[in-house]
Image (tube, rainbow, N blue to C red; front, side, top):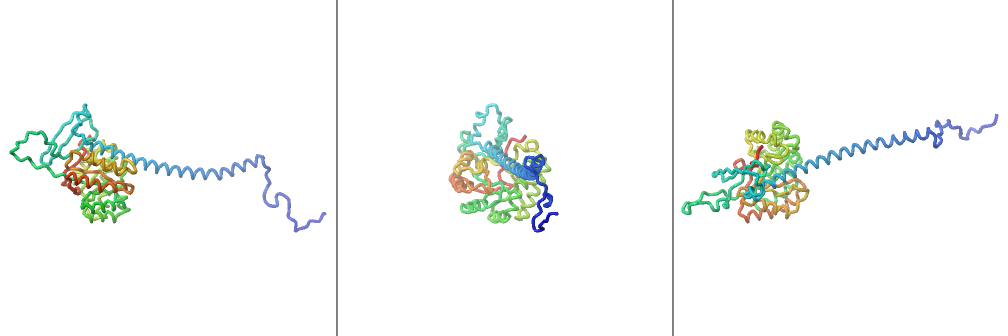
Length: 349
């Protein structure tokens, strides 16, 4: 028997517990495929989950932008300065005008207009050319009042807005949401302490959920009211519907919603002057100022729609010029209360 040195390594294939696989053999390709599956399959699953999350987030962001665009489109239609030319612009629309002289309001309604009219205050130009006895003093018209309103806050941007309002000694109204209140409760308390009004907007601000039914809207509103009172100690009494009292999401139940919130004692306010600050992520300061200038024409009671969410930097930048322009035009400023002249979309399905 030949001598074997025990210090030498054993060379047969099975000594290491492995079977050598020839490259190019069936067994080689089988192992290669299994290895690739173990690597690729988990990576594919991770990629699929990541893409799904991104898709959901993008869909939510897109829906939010659609909601804002819908709001601004309604606002721009509602605040069109040429209301006295509506019959010429829309010859197929028959307009009915009813006035309440005690409130100095005009309510335009037309079967062919989609949410584009609103209750507006009569101004001195409305009486031009009328047969008024020059000896008899005319009835006093309401003073020109501008209500600056901000939706979707509070946020750190709100604090910047509050500082501007303090500089001009102007009061405003903030319609708040629960997520923002939860993130910035101290800012909500600060705006109340500075003398501004805080109003209901929404707990979730998810149009497709809150407008499913009257009950779902009231449930959302109750959450919003509870949190506002918990955070600030104020029981809110004014309300702005997300997207306005009539919008693409609530058309079928708008009348019932209005009846329901009114029965609960809330005064709701739409707008008749749009800043346009939600049309895109960042609207030029000059455009915001011009939007207000254009849509304020012919209105004594002016409810202006702004937003104070975090991205609205140009809203803050435009605010001083907006305030100065309105002051130069004879407007005083106030916060909304249930007794304020109602500014509401007149076309309710």
